[in-house]
Amino acid sequence: MIVSTKVEEKVSFGGYIALAFAVVFFSGLLKSGEWYGVFDFTTLNGGFGKLMSNATGGMAAFRGTGGSGAADGFLFALGLVPTTMFALGMINILEHYGALRVARKLLTPLLRPIMGIPGSTGLAIIGSLQSTDVGASLTKALENEGELNKTERDIFTAFQFSGGAMIVNFFGSGAILFTLTDTTGAAVPGSIGLALVVMFVFKIVGANVVRFFLNATGKKEAKPQVAEVR
Image (tube, rainbow, N blue to C red; front, side, top):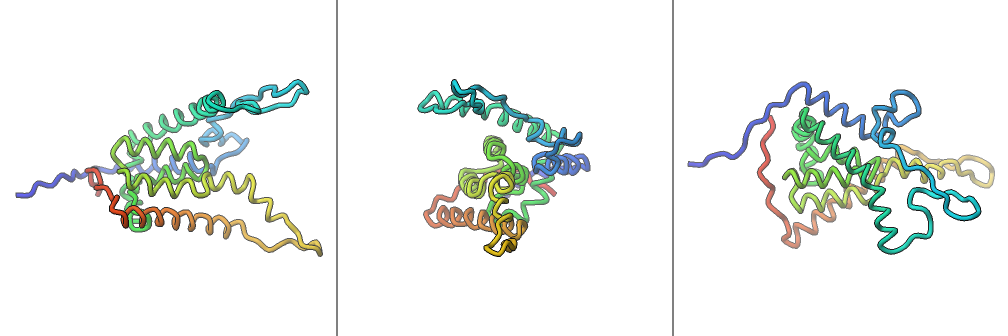
């Protein structure tokens, strides 16, 4: 007699609301100086102040300038603490209200064939498009909770860190390319939307390269037992 280890989980309407909030909260859609910025992760996370970097009055970020070795590494790690703690705190709250269960139900049929990862990574995918720190902390939390095995973690990590924080970095650095003009003064043809699509597609391609390598070298790991969602 075979006894099934799958347990049916109930997905409540509140879980859908929590997932919708999580998508908006981590996506950066509400990142603004307006009042609705209070519903954006980056806005609420804030930032460190500035430090005097040299005798001439130049200003530098929290880490200062000219650091090296273990001391500079310590300040870098210290700078990640607020983001990581805040992200993990929010994901625990959202998990309590069922956001991860809903994400697993809705996204697993899509993400499993595309990249071989479960739908519960959906929030981490959204977070990673805005902040590498958020994506990394959420991925670690998913692994600790048994949502990801080591193989899935490696595949997902490959997706995240090829073009990390894609949206923020693109609009912060790459969007200037669309202001270029040719010798006649005419704007160089380009599409921001197309550029983002190309980057996102190749992030998926990179994840599947790692997926193929792990499967080809026999490093595929069994999926941990996770409750089935209906």
